[in-house]
Every structure is written in structure tokens, then in C-alpha cells.
Amino acid sequence: QVQLVESGGGLVQAGGSLRLSCAASESIFNSYGMAWYRQVSGKQRELVALIRSGGSTNYADSVKGRFTISRDNAKNTVYLQMNSLKPEDTAVYYCNGFPVQGSWGQGTQVTVSS
View (tube, rainbow, N blue to C red):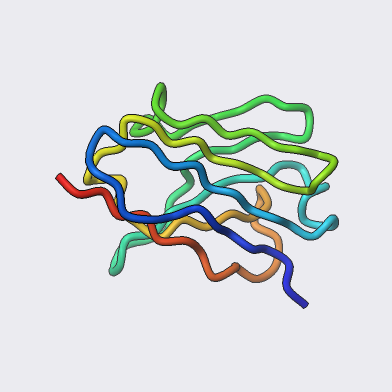
């Protein structure tokens, strides 16, 4: 049973933008919150942005002012608008509940060239 499907990644030049989407199962979407995480090969997965069921948000210091997380409750979908992208944003991006709920999806690769 597929519970998390991420999309929207790609190759972009530094300074560019991408919008990631994540379709989640209702059970995950209705947990305490939804979040985007990212992982660089060989490194730990890190929390990028969080949106609680009430709409409040938190961001990693490295993306504050550049990334915006949002959610569409009617579609069980969470988005990540990424602007002013930097090469250090290159990673596989995953969504999941916050706290993490169940298995991870396949993620979506974001590559930012300098």
C-alpha cells in the first residue's frame, strides 16, 4: 500500500526554483504534522520544513526565507516551494508525517548546479 508519493524534483541552476508535491495517505496526512526531509548520500536525513495540522510552520535555519511549506487538506497533499536554490540544497527530498509515520516513499531528487 503506497502511502507517500513525492514528485517535482529535477535539475535547476543556482538561484532557480522548484515546487515539490507529496500525496499522502489520509492516516499520515492527519497526524500531528507533515514535513519535508532531505538526505545527501552518506549523510543523515534532516528535517527541512514542518507544517502542523493547525497550519503553523517551522524551517531549518539553512532554508529560512527561501523555502515555503504548505498543505492542501482537501487533497491530502503537502507542497514545498523552493526559491533561490543553492548547490548545497542538492539532495533527495522526502515527505512524511511529523513525527515520522511508517515507511518512507521513494523521494524526489533535487540537483542544483552552480
